[in-house]
Amino acid sequence: MTREKLLEVKNLQKHFAVGKKNTIKAVDGVSFDVYKGETFGLVGESGCGKSTTGRTIIRLYDATGGEVKFAGEDVHGKKNKSQLLKFNRKMQMIFQDPSSSLNPRMTVLDIIAEGLDVHKLVKSDAERKAKVEELLEAVGLNKEHATRFPHEFSGGQRQRIGIARALAVDPEFIIADEPISALDVSIQAQVVNLLKKLQKERGLTYLFIAHDLSMVKYISDRIGVMYMGNLVELAESDELYNNPIHPYTKSLLSAIPLPDPRYERTRKRMPYDPTVHDADGEFELREVTPGHFVRCTAKEFERYQNEQKNK
Image (spheres, rainbow, N blue to C red):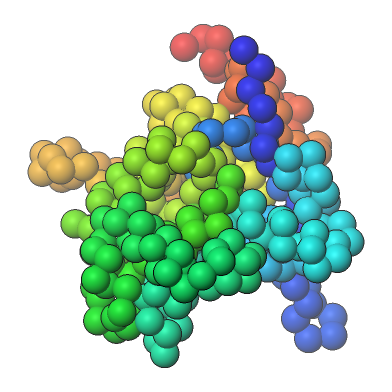
């Protein structure tokens, strides 16, 4: 069965000028596809460029180079106001910090209804209120919460409000930018389970960005690992977790703690040394085994393939 590509990212670049002469290459040639109905996880340490990738995809940043296509349409091409509105309705974002992403002076009703108002999706105040109450209940809150302000809620509840706001315009695709990193560990699983439930009910497609590889594995169908603005490995979730190939991915996995005191006493963190790579040759994302891509030179590619054959 052929899967439908919803998002195509090709050689995406986002560079930031620092002063007159220096440039930070936050995203430097990233390529991946996201298929309709799946969750694509993007993982890496802080500063690797994963959040910048998400923000560039949704046009919060203009791309320096490369191409982003959503449902076959060029995201960064010239668009008039009505075209931008149409695009913004299809693609929404859930932000990392629910405290700073919600206007403290607005009630929950007005926060969630913002998208409804902008896109003119309701015809009366009564319909607007009913739609917001329906969304609140969909994310596990009560309709009575509509009259309250963000400061009256816990972090987990505020993130549920952010999710309801993203859902208000019935998007096809949601970029979740570290949606659980600001939450207590006990709340993180609740929010991830809510996202999975909503995906099943509404046929959503996610780009899930996080630095916690264990949580990304739980929610994602496929995972891309980022390092220094590049995608260094891409594979199905279980394959990446059980059979990491790139040394950086191995390093990330070695840092994941397990609830086993005996294991933790002997667990050895594998530091990543960028100098281990072959200095000669061009680095490209190459398919080592079917569906499992690694950024490497031709020489490394041959070595990785031989290692996989001998397993």
